[in-house]
Structures are given as structure tokens and as C-alpha cells.
Length: 153
Image (cartoon, rainbow, N blue to C red; front, side, top):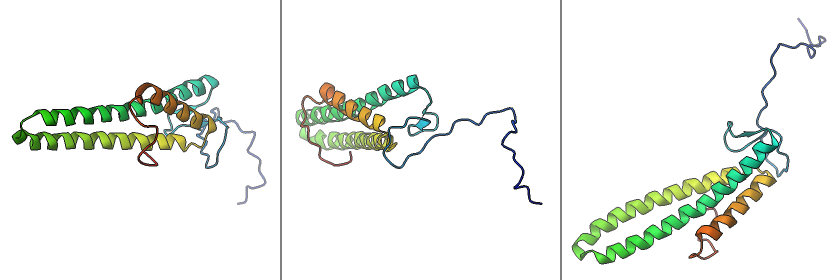
């Protein structure tokens, strides 16, 4: 039975469809139904956009704090290793290496999560990440070079 001639557009079932996340694969400034990484981080209002952008700035700045913490730990561990007797250095070096590996993993995970945020392809979110990187470097990067060792993290 063919029902293609029937118009059901005026039928109201008593419930509205929830707004869905907009997934862009091209650069955009549109913020309507913007979701950042997770479905629950769904921006639907101007205030939500502003608070989210502030949050993204903080997330990007915190990445620089993680990097600074890793550098400080490495300096502290090197100094500590020099201070202990030679017979204990191997054990301390192994423990230090495990902790540095954990810090490296955290740093990489965080960097890739920021990359996913950037890949919303939303101009406002991209600018927020840039601003957060700037703020983070100002606050936490005083003793480091502005150049990075790797391209993506």
C-alpha cells in the first residue's frame, strides 16, 4: 500500500525532537548545536558558548602546566639521582623512568584530547585553544623555549 501521497507533517505527537550535535568536517564559525568532543558538552546558548570557550582556554593552559610539571620533575629527579650513593642509583633511575613514562603518557593523552577539541573545526574553539596556549605559556613556560620538539604534541 503506497502512502507517499499522505502528508503527516502537521501531526504533533506531543513531544519535540531534542537538538542534535552538529558535526562539521569543514571550518565554520557556526555555533548552533555545537558539541565539543562529547555529546553532553552540547552548546545551545550564548552563555553556554562563552563558558565553554573559557573552559577550553583553561584546558589548553593546563596542558602547559602539565608540561612544566614534567620538566620540573625531570630536573628534580636528575638532582636526586646525583645525590644518592652509586649503589642506589640504578633503583632510583628505574623508578624515575617509570614515573617519567607515566607523565609522558598523560601528556600525550591530554594533547590528543586537545587535538579532538580543535577538530570541531569551529573557529571560536580554535581561537580559544590558541589563547589558552598563550596564557599557559605565559604562566608556566618561563623556563622553556618557545619551540617544540614534536609537531603534534
